[in-house]
Image 1: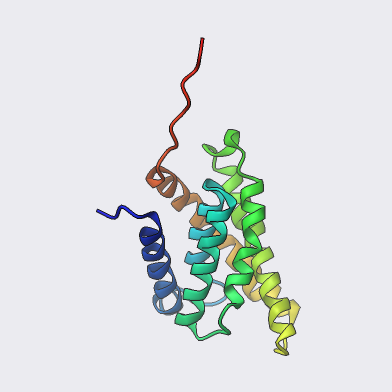
Image 2: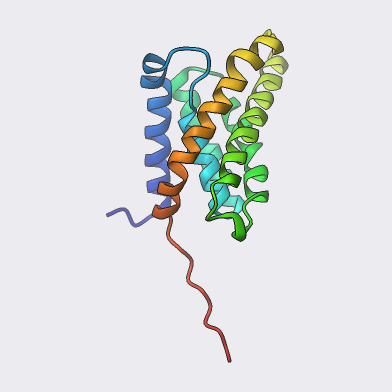
Length: 169
């Protein structure tokens, strides 16, 4: 049994990054694909304190870049941009509902890919925004929203619940 939460987090993120870089491209044709690392990071940021979400984003992004061959750190920065959005929409009243995680998946995907595009432009890669929007951002947002609707209840159930303070009366 894994007692350290960071070991479990690295295992989940490592598996997600490996699948994202290897099996997902072979099994799902273009345009767009679900981003498993994004889904894990967005869920962690939604359910946990922002510091933990940033840790998940940093580790997941670096692992994703290592497996995919992209510029190291680019995915981490793009994923870190999603953490404030996910945490900001994670009010306790919405945690049991699927609408807010779905909104985080849709808007967070657009934000992440937008940041990634601007970072690639800063590194002097050519970015055709019309093609990126039509062929990557919109399909990926749809995939991630569907994935969040399926994965969020599972990941929420696996997350340890904090103890409630005793009421004095």
